[in-house]
View 1: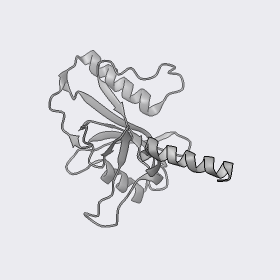
View 2 (view 1 turned 120 degrees about the vertical axis):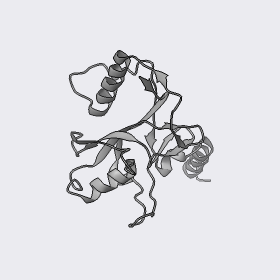
View 3 (view 1 turned 90 degrees about the vertical axis):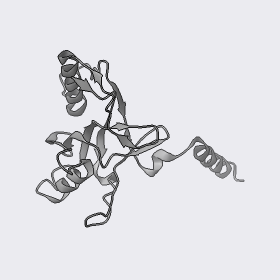
View 4 (view 1 turned 180 degrees about the vertical axis):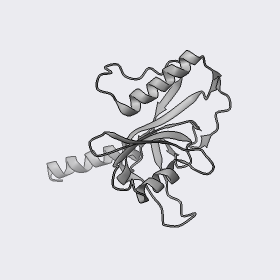
Length: 177
């Protein structure tokens, strides 16, 4: 069995921070995540995902990748259908690699894994996404390289320079300059 070298996931992202785009076909929208200085648009990700209600309880599990069904499209469908008022957050675990340029790519250079390693990976996904209360140990990713992406907001893209400038403004206000 072969698995992509690098997996990526987003845990407990907010529905309110999704950039849905304009109504109608071809009107875009983005599903951006960030890790360090790299911003990736995961709207075309092939993934399994979980929708949560306001109490963090999982209410729906789904997958993308069949036909033109990708992550943002499936979330958009859930935001308009009978699920529209039943979820506030979501987690996803993606199969497409995110490269250093912030683009998604098919990880054809998969590494062979044993059945035990595959089961360990699936268990880790479930532990990460569901967070069962009686499992004290967190996910064990085994030999998989797994990267978590935080949901992108304008706040996540502040640089050290931006922070330094803001601190200087506050210092000037305090000192009355």
